[in-house]
Image (cartoon, rainbow, N blue to C red; front, side, top):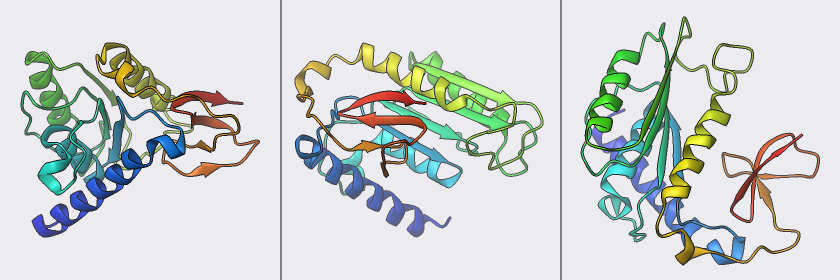
Length: 195
């Protein structure tokens, strides 16, 4: 991805997060410790947004992400301003080096930033949800990491929204889901496993 494309994509992401934060009451969600998730180039975007903040990319929301969840990217730079980060990669990824990701998270941890890293033996780039692979269940691990950051978030009580009956449920990609959906859902700012 070229620099201009990266900037444009990050600006789009900043606008999307701004929209969600501006409609939090209407949607019945709590944005006090929101997370940014991405894979490959999207992981870089999530990390940059989690470190620099939305205003750097033209956003108006000043609250930074409480957690970044990233998969398979070769991003190596970090700073003391980065958000707590969960990351994973396959050891057979021909695009993103798992060692680069691990080194980045080790450096962040040395700065006191909470991190968690998983390298999955033999997996290639783009394993996604990990269904049927060694990575199966990584999303549950990432959600647990995010929840741990929520329990550390000192601003959480400032943004509590009352639960609304019959609120819309969303999947982890932010898409509305219908009754009967199976998987992790977010409803009224809370995560649930729907079986």
